[in-house]
Amino acid sequence: DIQMTQSPSSLSASVGDTVTITCRASQGIYNSLAWYQQKEGKAPKLLLSAASRLQSGVPPRFSGSGSGTDYTLTISSLQPEDFATYYCQQYYIARTFGQGTKVEI
Amino acid sequence: EVQLVESGGGLIQPGGSLRVSCAVSGFTVSSAFMTWVRQAPGKGLEWVSIIYHDGRTDYADAVRGRFTISRDNSKNTLSLQMSSLRVEDTAIYYCARDVLSGDHWGQGTLVTVSS
Image 1: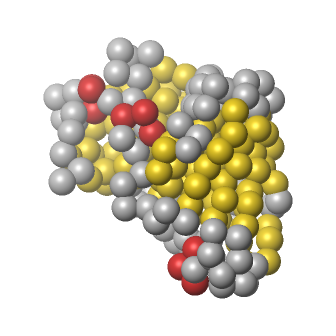
Image 2: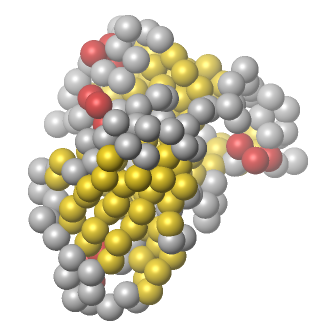
């Protein structure tokens, strides 16, 4: 099975900051990586797929990059509505989520 | 409009069995990759199972041999049969259309395993 190690587990930031969240896969996943945002009491929302493909309706301040085993989600100019928990998910073999990153004020 | 509506959650004793279902509208389950994802109270997302459009299935190690994913093409529903339930299976269970089929999630159904 592919393990996903996501870091940090939480971070504190302010409106306007740029934040970066990383995910490392236990083996190469060939850009088969998605990023989700989850707010309290809600189902997750897909932000990006294929490591860097922004989903329709998602603001361009969200971006993804990476290759091989290492991937990054960057949120530029953090907005109040961005405070949430973020998860990576590999879909190269079966599916695995990272542990999540809570972005707090 | 795409909709996924889970049902069947509830309180069950350890060792018991429960079936959760997902009623789908707006697309056919047989044409998509469909998954179950769970989230224990206050914890992160955990992938549980997938059924591919060709009927192949796969499971997380934590549930393999205890859970069975299936679909009913005539009713356009997805199901997860859970047996030998453990306290650690307590979670909200989400039905979702997989990211490779155009990601879409239901609202979840709570399964509580407790004596």
